[in-house]
Amino acid sequence: MSFTFNDLKQDNQAPWRAYIEHDFVCQLGDGTLEPRAFRHYLKQDYLFLIQFGRAFALAAYKSPTLADLRHAKAGLDAIIDLELGLHIDYCKQWDISEQDLAELPEARATLAYTRYVLDTGNRGDLLDMHVALAPCLVGYAEVARWLISKPSTVRGDNNPYEAWLAMYESAEFQAAAQAEVAWLNERLAEVSPTRFKQLSRIFNDATRLEIDFWDMGLNQQM
Ligand SMILES: Cc1ncc(C[n+]2csc(CCO)c2C)c(N)n1
Image 1 (cartoon, rainbow, N blue to C red):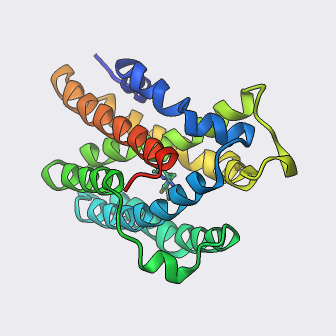
Image 2 (cartoon, rainbow, N blue to C red; image 1 turned 120 degrees about the vertical axis):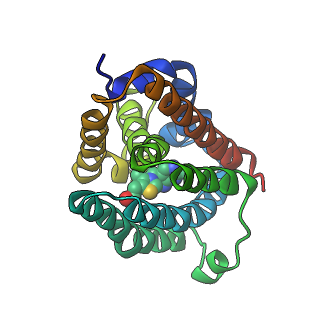
Image 3 (tube, rainbow, N blue to C red; image 1 turned 180 degrees about the horizontal axis):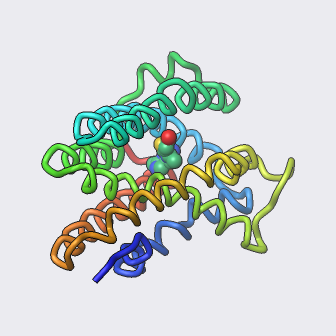
């Protein structure tokens, strides 16, 4: 028996579709999302990215080989040197200052998701950790592809969320997500059915926590 990333999705079809096709995503796509919902999401996503930086640092610690260590370092570099800077600039365009970001309390959905990933990494191995990160790393690429194919999606200046969509649609981001799928496929090919079930549980948990993150944005919950 040999497993792939697609088997993780197949095994968790209902929550995976609910995550990819969430109302928050649909409203982003057609431009009807309330700006205050998006701003709440952006602010919490800043805190999320900081915790994901820590998760990549933990992935480095959990790396048994030099190749894995380099892979984790590249992820950490991308978050710290690139994405957080881009995110801070993007927040400014939405009237959220660096000072606002520095003073933010974490919403419960942010706490739950990020600490779940860190705990999964702490108690498990590098594969557990990557499966916990997969809905984040692979899911947003699928969200972008799904939105682009959706007839009601508005592109260009008529959609205030165009820049967000364009970022996740970009060839660079899509390639990073594909590389993650390839990494997972290589490892999943070697796991037993019992181990696959454990990993599928982690994938299910992380996917549901992504749904809660969209909900948190829509409802502006703390
Ligand atoms: C809640 C939430 N989930 C996923 C992402 C997407 N994302 C966050 S970090 C990262 C990889 C960075 O190298 C990706 C794709 C997000 N922004 N917010």
